[in-house]
Image (cartoon, rainbow, N blue to C red; front, top):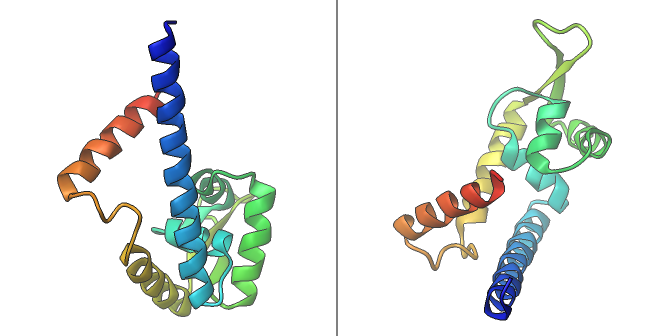
Length: 138
């Protein structure tokens, strides 16, 4: 690998890490306004429908045991319920309650406000999405 390649790779990694840090800070700030932790907000954001704990953990990029801890807190807040899985007796499906759905909608509205990605047009966000997917597919 040539020195310019190494420098470009280092700079790109720095930019990706910087963006990830900004997004994490943004999620934390918005979560706090709703009385949530960042992991709780991430779990709510990822609850696009009924999910198993394993599916939610994958979406949150964490271990199932960590997701369980977060879900326990969200369940105590009345935002998520555990239901029997229709086809797997060993698994539970996580389902948002009415309060959880309302809280998720509030969260999603807050997350798009002043998002670190807001400086990019929809087309630029689409390009970034495609490039990141391609890089992660390796």
